[in-house]
Length: 476
Image (tube, rainbow, N blue to C red; front, side, top):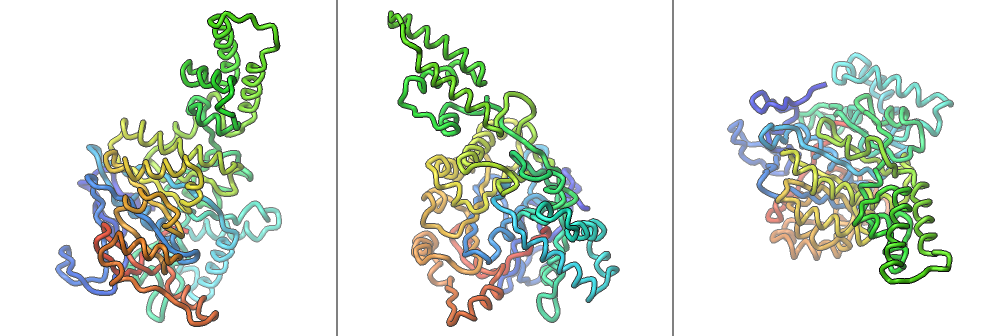
């Protein structure tokens, strides 16, 4: 497996990417390439550390939004080097789901290529043929049914065998773009794993490290705690908890009860009240502490998520069915990760940071989620923190995400007429350049999906729109 060196003097592109530029794919008209002195259909995007590099990925389901965002992240990992030490970027991906059909497609493709091309042909083009053969054999064993074959959208540890299928009479998808499959180093964080972490790692690929993780209580503010255990902030016991948790930093269930007693006694003494009734407020505090102890993704000690996130691997925070988490818990973890990056990580490291949120609309259902996403777009540039977000619709997103996006990738077509109207306001040439896909019959729907999968438009800095066939992912 190839890696890009941390030393820019020895940097060499592994894909068509250039240092601090990423390879987008192929346009429809030739432009002059100053590096070769020739015209080309290939397109690149500069990643400037002085500018915001936020990207929105739009389009209906099935047109490869997640795949295209994954390809962007691969380019960013390989070709972005900022800061005095020119280190790889910190990449954090929030993954929402796994796909049972994906592993079966990989299996069918593997057997198809063996029949049509032979194992020697495949081994000459992939490094993981032995590992993939073993994985497929395990898929076929009844003992692993329901435990294996649940690949996520970001199975970055597997080379993409699907790219070797015929695309047209002359090309595979990889040969069309002139790139090769490649596995990437990945660290996958799972909260309360619902299956064996070893099986999760197998589905993610040989380059995967799976960590069953948690957050420490001390990472949460009172506002977070109130969401975790559903505290009514208008009660007396809530105010006692807030004082103990935020002001006295008693951020442990047992310490919280002890400190709450002290605060309660101090309050009675100050008010010169002799309490002859059972202290129901303290009973409320006790029940909150008891509930906190039952939250399995919170602990008092040990190495938590933030002590293991770094830029030596691509970090995937697994919010799929692999993690036993409520939607509320996912929103809190998302919020804490954004706060950690903006308030702590950027103070310690001078690397580029890219946070990627697939199906971003799921994080925007709460006031918190909207505030955090807007905060990323608003404050990201000054902190060199960049946000990549995939969604089907624009009209439900906070205005900061739309007007703050540097670039917009449209996969297939727009899912909403409202989005077309909005983009006409934001992008000067959009109504001239964009053409909606319209099916004339039910049978044509699937045909159009196949034709435009991975194709669409790229809007550069919200100033220029062009048709583009996006580069394929090098991983599954």
